[in-house]
Image (cartoon, rainbow, N blue to C red; front, side, top):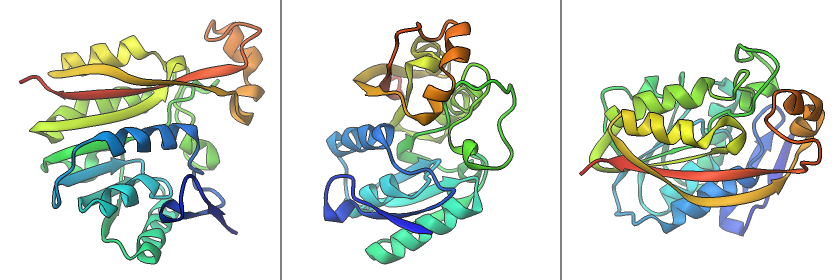
Length: 228
């Protein structure tokens, strides 16, 4: 079934079918960061892990040439439908993380990748958990993104990445810097545990990722650009 999400305003509505990640606080925090970026008409934007396409559409509304990538067929179809309903042009492709964009260069790369630590070391191959589970430390996709994103950025390009402190902010900053990018945390927001983290409180506590009384997680926006 399709549901209607209304994050902030009528221009931001998207259809979200069952099985596609519903934009939540992390998506909306990333959208706020996107809105602060200076954008020229015709600039090239890559949205990695687009889900419903909310961020891709936000960039397209500002005149960007947007490529949106997701690994699931349902998310790709959903973004195409949402772009058509909004009468916006977005190139939506199915593929693994950055692979569909190799060889190209972008002015802005956005990503809200799966980052939730999970009891299973491997990423799920099917089901809803593909949108959030990312191995024991939550870094299965974040690390790959950090290692490959520099090659896709123009010299003046910018990466905006959102994830939870549960998967390690210092590790992300260090990895991006090793890849030749200057990275910093620009935004922080505490949000209440959702159903996934609530169901894993005991496991997360045992791993030392939270304390027994924790009820909120901290989300961060990391902004990175090539060293100039």
